[in-house]
Amino acid sequence: MPRWKWFVDQTGPSNRIWIAWDDEYIDVDILDVGDQFIHCRVLIRCLHEYVLVTVVYGANDIVVGWSLWQALSNLAGAVNEEPWLDMSEVCSSSGDIRIAMEEYQACIFDTGLITLPM
Image (cartoon, rainbow, N blue to C red; front, side, top):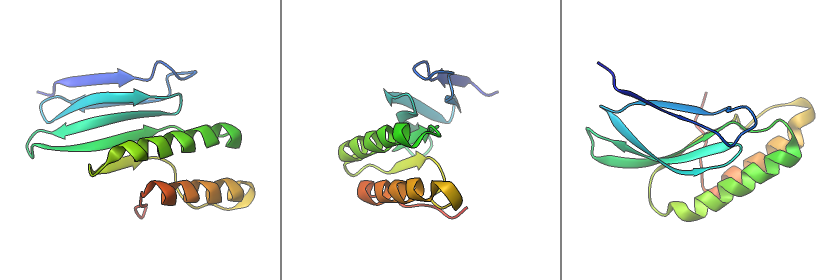
């Protein structure tokens, strides 16, 4: 029987980010909450291993997006050697948001993250 636990972003304008987990399998320790992200350390119980996870709900406004990219850069500086999974947006697009995507890709490069194929 699942033992669900929840964390809801209370800082954002509309509680946009929710995290749910089964406490039997993983433990989640919330480390930081911003208006566009939740950063946590996850213990995978069966492996006795930790991974950092950042869940992002980025703003559509490019100016507000810059504050997210700065926050990701700050988080990257504190990661050290721990595995880090950033659940964020896609890194390629076309049209009017091309410049924003280029800046986002620069942020990904600067923080040492890699993108996974979709």
